[in-house]
Image (cartoon, rainbow, N blue to C red; front, side, top):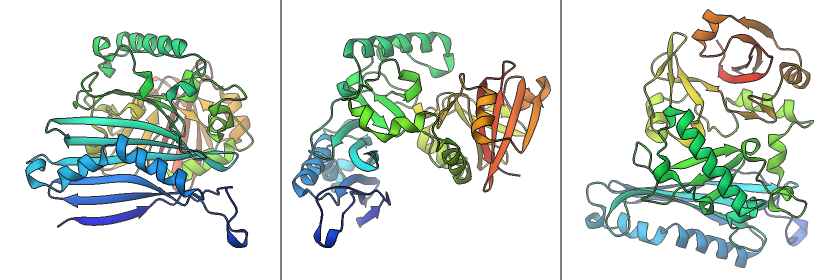
Length: 388
């Protein structure tokens, strides 16, 4: 029997739209409309709460059409079309604000299994919408120049494939990078590949994930640009709120760009994000190398063999504290003196999979933050873990 559920995502965002009766205002909310039947499941975003119903309906229709929702529903409703494999459809979505007012909806619809037409496969469909007009926003709005963006990403793929063998990038299939499939996230940009082009070891379509600071040279941040009016760029830079944001994330057990994984069963996380290579030694446990693009140079630590205990990031923008760039002095000026400072000599650094140098430890809630610095006092690793 099919189960229907609507899961409300509590976004708690204020929307300064057309005033409602008695001066009330409404905020856009994303509902997840879900169905399940047999071996198939379907979950997709549905926008509600916009004062302009025409714009709201326009966006929802585009999500349905671009995400092939009706076709996936047909598969779900037919045991014959499902076959033994079935189809799983899910999504990631973000409402991005401008001066606290919701402005952009960013969505990616994922489908894996029995595709429309009968083939088995995987597909990611990214899209962005203007919440004021309902118009789709093309990725060209993100770049100062389309040609420069293409050159930048293609060069990055060539360098990454030759320098980092663990990524298993095949430049023959990964080039040219499909910049038309770029989509905003709260902390950067993801570039997805269409089906039957560049695929990962799991046979999922490829994707590359970047923090804003990694692609700042090609981003259009001019005063009239889309990015200039969004609040998300401030989260990638040091501001008066950096310390507050860092400690809030530490207390919550998450890092920018990485979901809530600490405390989850590692088998469930691996099923979601897939493994890339064999595990590496970490303290008395292991460090997992995952395939999903957000985990490039970011690893999960497991000490008890079953539960994710920490996140070790060699690539991170912690609200303006950037690996490979921010100095120890700057970190301490922003976050205050740490609870403890330790020397990472060679044996200890090896246990923590870090470089030799020093580390500063902070704590918020039930989590500990370790900022590790190299011999030149530059931040090289961010390690967030459950406190002992």
